[in-house]
Amino acid sequence: MHIKIEHLLFKRSHVIPLTQLKGHITYIGKKTLRTNPYFDHELNQTTKSRFIKLLNSLPSKGNDCGYRMIIHFNKEVSGHDEDVLKEYIRMSMGELQELMGQNLDWLGINHFSHDDRLPHTHLIISGYNRESKGKVNLNSYHFLQLEKSLISYLSKAVKNGYSLTKPS
Picture (cartoon, rainbow, N blue to C red):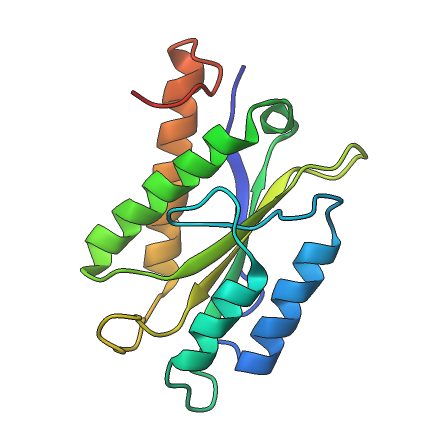
């Protein structure tokens, strides 16, 4: 089995105003039948209200409130343990945090449909660091590094015959 990220896409190449970000969080939650589909850096199940509360507590001036992106996978990913995929996303986001030298607050949701569409993960990243209240400046280099990290984790899992089992 070969797994790769077919493309990494974020809807805009700049930060998104808070109302649009909140609307997108609600929209992506409606595209799933699960009751609590969101996950973050520590929890496999969290709520959108928890993340929105965080966003509301951070400074926001104009467009400086966050980023959204969609990671598309090939169909082979959709049959595997979703919690394991969440862990690989967490590990990749951890590498991104190390690269940037700051913690990131983010919210994710997986969409694995049974129709012809590709499985994908939505990530919403806060535009400010919760601890320092400093601005988070992501650019295409950071997204490329995240993509490389995910490809590495998923490829190693398949190559080693772990079939996306949890990393040791």
